[in-house]
Image (cartoon, rainbow, N blue to C red):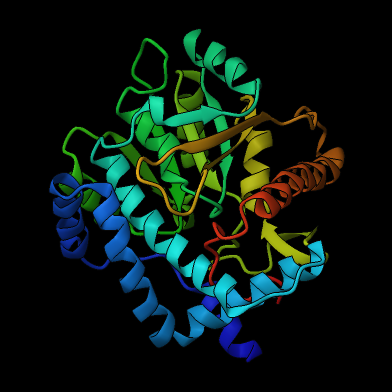
Length: 316
């Protein structure tokens, strides 16, 4: 079991072909969301029955969450998480297809005003996101000019994924999208300089900070999450000190699992950890930043228990 769990946690996110996504984009364009949501329920049930590994890891997460909050886990919770994941795929394609707009999002924190001021003054920021909720929403809003800021916001997404295939897939959905993908495995001194230029010129650099890289399994930070120690990517938090830009934690979550007109809650919180540090201080500050990120993520996991989309043994 341990070896199998490690294999899953080290797998790269891959877009092998854009045909299924293109078909889904077609459905999103012509089929009303309530009907898609209804069909997704049955697809999710089939996946629940047949996908043993996904079911196992959902159950593992739901049990840990239940233990932490003092609630008993049932199979219904596991299925609800898988159904929520299926809906999130539809929502991501909807976002890139310009079916989700700014008016569908309710901002929950005052720090979104601070972020808008930063972007409005022509400056950029570093965004720490996660696989909790819909990580695509902010990138879509920024690249499709739906931020409430009167200028185009270039977005650089750092992902453990083949850049060319991802870009082809997004362009297939919406030719007007303008997100630049950087493979985390390719980051070096030159890449960091490019990222610095991007934020200094008013762009957003976005990274998922809740999943370790298969290329650097030992470069991690340890932090308590739902009562057990979990590992987080060292590089994601190191970049916060190298980019010389304000850091924000951003989470976009569906307000209800089933709804006819989707509404989302977007949490935007500015990091409180001081980002100016000597080399000697940096490691402790990185741990503090990681702890700050995980604390917010844990709080939102409790509020939105089915929108966690890390399908592997998170506490291995």
